[in-house]
Image (cartoon, rainbow, N blue to C red; front, side, top):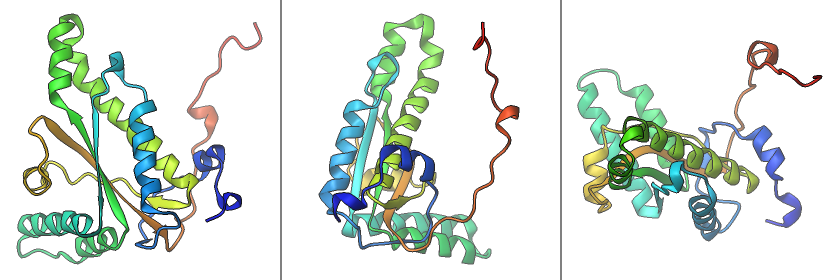
Length: 206
């Protein structure tokens, strides 16, 4: 991939979409994904500079194992019900090149609650907001490399198995899963609600 093919950050912001049709032939070296994840962890803001977000980046066998776990847990939940729709989705995630697991460190959140009791009830919410910023930053960064992704939430269904298989610390709480890969099919057309119903500007002419 040459620098001419790279997407600017502004373009990535405008064109980042949920991509379900993913392949395992990345347009960049896998290390480029790792580099992005490191940069996101270093530079994404967090409440009280808590730096509570944690990531695990899965490739190869470990990536496949994650979606095997997810499928097995879902089949247990569905039982004798129709599993065809879920199976198709899981197969599409498994076909991707890798998955990023997003966690929040509950020990960090608890320490902040103890240190700042006045705001104690806010810290779990702020931790989720911190995680969301990391998710969006990584998703947008992937788009600059022409790497597609989607955001999934199979937690807490898969939490225990994921913790066991990938040796996740007890204080890391799973928040989301982001399968990524080369884009096999673009996302469909997106509709937008009118901005004047979603945004107000005050004082601009004062």
